[in-house]
Length: 487
Ligand SMILES: Cc1cc2nc3c(=O)[nH]c(=O)nc-3n(C[C@H](O)[C@H](O)[C@H](O)COP(=O)(O)OP(=O)(O)OC[C@H]3O[C@@H](n4cnc5c(N)ncnc54)[C@H](O)[C@@H]3O)c2cc1C
Image 1 (spheres, rainbow, N blue to C red):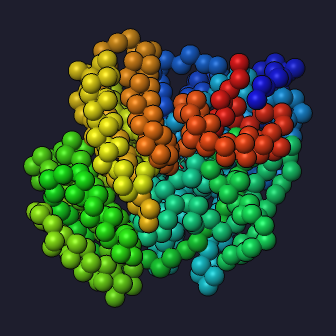
Image 2 (cartoon, helix red, strand yellow):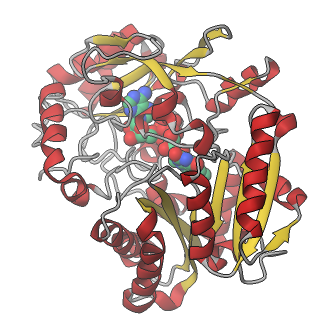
């Protein structure tokens, strides 16, 4: 969709928004605008202070749904591109401001927990509530959202919903799409729309799914209601096993899932990936991690099924205390991000990931195909310090593969993306699509997988295209995200 440029210049945009909301809600500080022009897809150049723009005209911090509506209506009338933002942990370029003089619409001041309803088992939050804050508050009451992405300390509900995020306990609780009961969003022309909270309905298509996963390219999410579950840490059972082949671990997961068991965590690490997480005990093998939870009889039965599945397979056991300890260190807070940034700068070395999904029957083939192609076709393979994968979210019909790759940067910093990240990412995406899988399991399309959006959806793409045309006729919402940017 071509975007007509705004008749207003960046100073006029900022001035009009100050009139609309007040000066303290419009940030035009140059350093903030530079930082806001990228996300973690460009984490290396950002860490080095390299920002090539375009830069947004302003970062706007609304404090009510009505203010979000007023800003969007203004942007729509004046053809100003809008990049929604909450926690800022996006990894795929979704926050990049690729249109000059965009505005970043930051929902993080909409940060109230509006309701915790322990009878009907749901909580309603504004889009700027960090998941960690809601989870901390719920656990005091013996409840949990069941949602636990590694970015839990930082990610907020707007972004979590907009990206179709998924957490470590997904095999029991599902992804965010299984958790959202209802929500409120604002359309680009300023219309406020609310999808009410009901246990289920058959009143036409499920319109929640137009909003969940829209990556800020269709509307702005202001409130979300999610399901709650009982929190029972006393029943958790941790398991760790070493197996020789990646496919052996995947087979074990397949059998457990197809037999109807739902451990909350089910992961298989390739030997390379295992080495960086479990150097003390992986000994060059694949590591399988499982956690059973729930009411005690269910957790115990799941545990027995896990024991039975491995009794039939060649394996070595890992001390469950090591798995429990590792789990406690898994999440990323701001200190971890700062540490990574300092190391990247000091060492010119970094790691990225690409996550895809695939049917059970082709998991091992996809793993092997990617490993082979990257090792033999990637021009800078000699600079790789790690290439591996793990499966961390499983379903009745298949699983995800999360490819992880670390490398020395032996080129000009600005060329890091085109020399390293993009070619490896492309191989993984191409192989997933070739084998009938999805090119993106949970990080969103962002701005760097858009060239495959049509191929991903096939004839279904027409539905997506018409949604965009109908909901955002002026193309102001996060241009270049999900849908390729037309020059
Ligand atoms: C260290 C680390 C670990 C991670 N681990 C996981 C993981 O385990 N699982 C997982 O799923 N993801 C993970 N991610 C990715 C990221 O945390 C998720 O995509 C998360 O959902 C983003 O939330 P956020 O609030 O930071 O959103 P942001 O980064 O602010 O935005 C993400 C996207 O959503 C859009 N958006 C933001 N707010 C709104 C809104 N209110 N309305 C409409 N659109 C909006 C943005 O335009 C952007 O496209 C990880 C990221 C990091 C950095």
